[in-house]
Image (tube, rainbow, N blue to C red; front, side, top):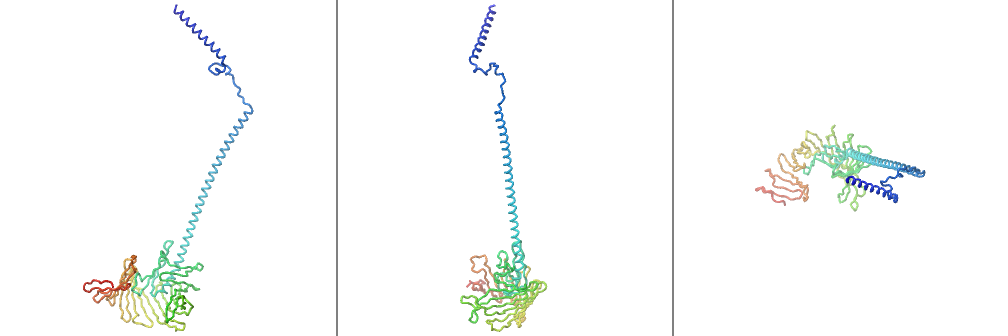
Length: 451
């Protein structure tokens, strides 16, 4: 009973509290309408739909803004595309221009290279065609040896010429190097020459043993060679003489005749060429060849010297050489007119497989001369010794010493003559270059000092 009363009493108190709280809340809400508005309190006004209709002017502004934005974006995109396309187009054009310029430059370089190479080949072909006949004629005018063979000039690669080499039958058996060959270097040490570009002819040439100018006749078979003049004294008078050679060719472009004239001039006070005095015919050379262009006969007519225009013109000597080839040996027969049994006779020039001269022998008609000279060469191919044998006995040798690589050497080449006694031993030597001599002791065999 008591318990029931207690519970009812508590319930009444709880209900009273709830009613009071509700009443207080309602009163507070009325006194502060804006503070609690929007909270978790029920507010019917908030549930009313709002008027979302825009005014006409606001709608136009928004539409204009949207259109402007779209147009601006489209314009930006269009400008970006055009800019990109322009950049790509300019890049392509620049690249194409670079390629075109590169191709044109390359084509120009190739074209210029071809033209330059063609000019070089044309020049080499011109020299290859013109030089052999000029060199051959020039050598025959300045040298008294018998020229029996001429190497052809070849074009090496497309920029150089091979050397010009001719084979000679030498009579002087005391010369160093390779006296049976005359070689002109046409590549790394080329000869000097001048060319008439209008007539396409070589008009002058300068080599170690050729220094002359050329004048061409109306026909291709005539050539005038003018050599360098010299001053000499004769009969207490100074003369300036200059050689003038008239060269005649056959249809094969082989030299068949050379007429050598000497033009005499007076000499001025300063030792220069003065006024012309007279022209003297000095020598006439005639050449004959077989079908293979091999020399078979050479005839030399020499006229006596003249020192004035009033001196008589007469022949002093006629010398005829007949040539035959037997294997690697040339048989040369010499005949004088008038006859000279001591100098007339036959020479034999023997060559080896390498075209080096091995020996030269001579026997005259009188049989008073019967000698043979053996020729030895060193590793460089130059003559190292001449061994002179007379009637089977060695009487003399000539040693040739070279100091080509010695910068301190006073002489690049020295020759030493060795004389042999009947016992076959040399007891005497003479250095022909320095003039010094030395003697061998017959007891000890030792050489004395050079004195």
